[in-house]
Amino acid sequence: MIRKSSLLWIVLCLSFVVLAACDDPGLQSSQPMPTLMELPTLTPTDTPTDTPEPTATSEPSATGESNAAPTETHTPTVALSETPDEFDPTRTAIAALNSTAQAIMDASATAIAFDALATDTPTFTPTATVTTTNTPTPTRTSTPSRTPTRRATATSTATITPEAQPTNAFPSIFSFTASSTDVAGGGQITLRWEADGEEAAIEQQDANGVVNTRTAVEVSGELNVTIPNVQTGRVFYRLVVRRGLQEITQTVEIRVQVQCSFSWFFDSAIAQAENIGCPTAASQLVVGAYQTNEFGVMLNVNVDGQNMIYALVRAPGKNSLFASDQYGQAASLWDGVNNMCSTYLPVPGTILPQQQFSWMACTQFGLGGYWIDGIGFATANIDFSSRTIQRATDGTLFVDAPDGAIYRLNPLLPGALTATWKRVR
Image (cartoon, rainbow, N blue to C red; front, side, top):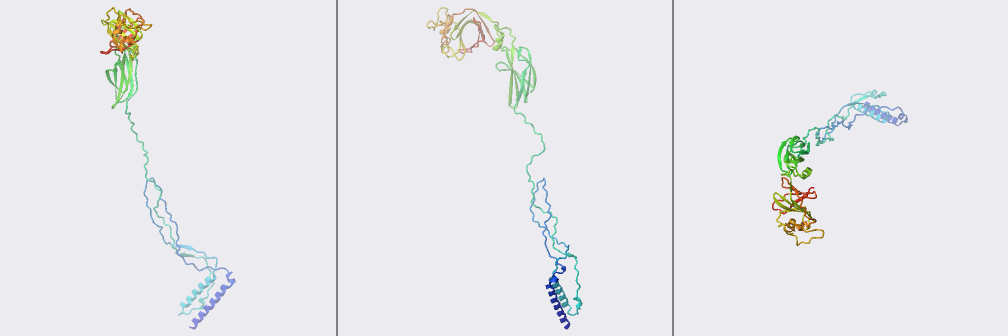
């Protein structure tokens, strides 16, 4: 018991000595002593995870959002702690006292030698202390994240596909020609054409548009034809090209040098220009009469066995009722003596129509009255020289005049009062 009390007393004395030393400035300026050890602390370290970003792919992908958190793993690490440069004597003394007191109390049954308290000055060197720290280490995780992705969009296909060329819905004629357009009747020419369509044909037409022949041909090609000896002096060839219900045409006119059995009593150029074809017979020189008037002329000739009188009125006529040059005709019934216009008073510079022409002018009706109302008074005496006449196959009558003029009188239709006339020379 006495021994234990002595030990406690010694401990207390030593404590006071140590405390006093702590207050000694000299000791504070002495060389600092290292700490024994610092206990490891659980220090969580938020280390950013190394998360690889998914790369944008050419294929559209739907990525979802994930809330996965970094995984914490506790990995023991060896940390080499350095001895601090500063020495805290108070902390060192208290640690030593605590350690000594604990040793004395534990030795209640056993005598503890004081030598145990005797300590040599420890030399503190840096030691490699294994400390266990709760350090989250980065783990390589594939964390889905919202990444910019290419949306599926309508894209043009790079494949080059040959496209069917649309067929023109309408036929076309690029050219249609004849090797000659002025040919003697019975001669040959070559027709050439180039077109686009499904089928083609060439039609031969007369001057009135009547189709005489039709020949199926290729859409493009040529055809030899014989020119008919038409009396009209003209023939037409028409190219017809069709595609479906569509049709296109083109016409070539051929002037025919008609080979007639009889010749006209005037130039062939006039016959060709007038497109009259061939005469029905040779020309005739007949007894006739001719007289000029204010608005035209009057003719008297024997045609086809009849003594015919013609009144040719120049438009618009004295009464202004003639829209074009028109004529009227009648077989003469004059008595051979009387002037049928004796009741009329001619204007200065004119005379009454004479003999057979007085009968026609003052007894036969024309447009708007008697023929004298349209043709007027005579301007010269009758010329009784013979006249030349000739008919065409269509009934057209050609008559010459003393002054060299040639009159064309187109056929008078049945029941008609007048028909047209023309001076062709």
